[in-house]
Image 1 (spheres, rainbow, N blue to C red):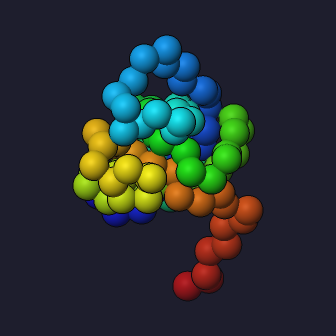
Image 2: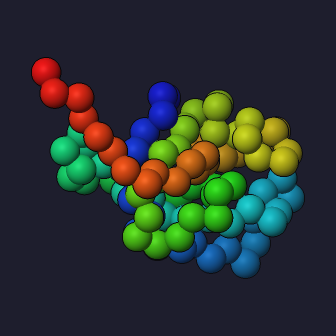
Image 3: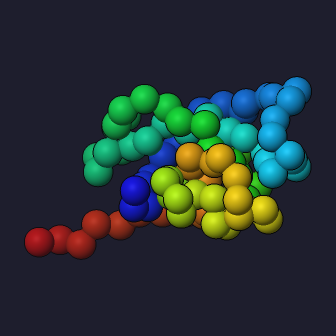
Length: 92
């Protein structure tokens, strides 16, 4: 999975999780298409950027999602790696 853009739509609270994710904040992210509309189902993502609800973020999935976390051997499917301030399209 390559980098994707999404919007944080909620917080996930887990009273129990695997030790390798201990201390990781979990957020619910709605992937967005190129026009800013919903693209597929929301995903649970680990957050290393201290993002919050309503923010537009970019995230990675697959094996790459586990690498930015403190413990790289974990079951993360998605990790937020940046907060987007603005998106500008080049005119064609």
